[in-house]
Image (cartoon, protein in one colour):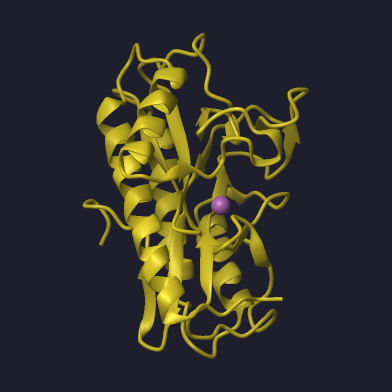
Length: 253
Ligand code: CO
C-alpha cells in the first residue's frame, strides 16, 4: 500500500531531509585522498547525531554502519572500513539515511577523488542528470513508469546501463515503503503519482553491463564486469505543483 502523507508528516520529513543534506555536506568536504571510508562514516554519524537524529541504516537488517560508502566498481551498500582508503582517481558513492521525529530521509551522491578519468566524470554526470530526467515526470497524474522510463532512456542514450536488481522506494515512517521505484521499464505503467506521496528516486548506473552481484558479506554489491558504477538519490515529495527535493543541499537546484 502506498502511504499518502499528511502535511504534518511532510513537515517532519522536511526536517529529516534537511539533516540528510547536512550530513552529505559534511561528508563531501572531507573527501580527499588518504581518508578512510570509516572516517567518513564516523563524521556522518556525528553530523546526524549532532542534530538529535539517528542514522537510519545502522542496524537496519543487521547493517553494521551509519552510511553506505561504495568505491569504483561497488554499486551500493559498501560497508565503511578502516582499511579502505580513498585514492586519487577513485569515485565514491555515499548513501545516507536519517531518522528524525519518526520519519526517514534518504539520499546518495557520487564524487570523484582528486583528478578522475573523463569517462568516470561522465558516469557521475549522466547518473545525476538521469535523476533529473526522471524527476521531470514526477507530476500529479503521471504514472511511475513515466519516471522509470525517462531515467532508463537517458542512461542508455549515453551508452551506459541502469541496475535492475535494486530500485528506489517509497519512504516515510519506514525506510523502505511501497512503491518500488525501478530505474527502467515502460512509460504509462505503474501506480499514478499523487500529491503527498514521498519517493526515494535513486538511479544506479554502470559504465558496462547492468549486471551486479552481492559479495559474501551479504551487503556489498559490485558490477559483475568490474566496470565503475555511480549512484544518485533524493527523497522527493510529490506536490500538485511538481516535485520538491526534501534532501536538497546547497549544491542542488
Ligand atoms: Co534509498
